[in-house]
Length: 152
Image (cartoon, rainbow, N blue to C red; front, side, top):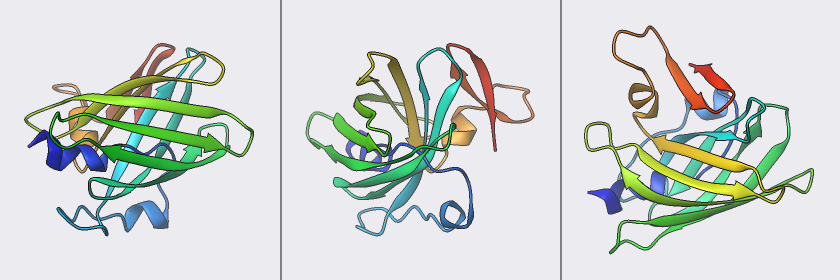
């Protein structure tokens, strides 16, 4: 199961807009698309974006400061892990390793760092907002080091 969900998470950042709204989870298809959310550093920056493809693909999105990032991701399939790499228009580079999956929502979870040495935490999947919504909470929140960041 982990292998099937992993490809959907390795994306980093585009705020929810018409493009994101059209993102569809289509298992086993290169047309597959899922949302990706990430925290970067401890100053409140976060990513909101999309991962496209299955077993490997592209990522695109925006950092909350408006910087656009694009990259690639791949899954090793057998071991249930994967990697993602992004390059942003301001020169920032981000690398992450996906290493676990939430069984209930299928959300894949990973960590990494950027080229400035800041830590990165990432969550992705078709039900990522459900995973990030604590019991009894009204909305999803990214658990960033700077404090929870509301997501919709």
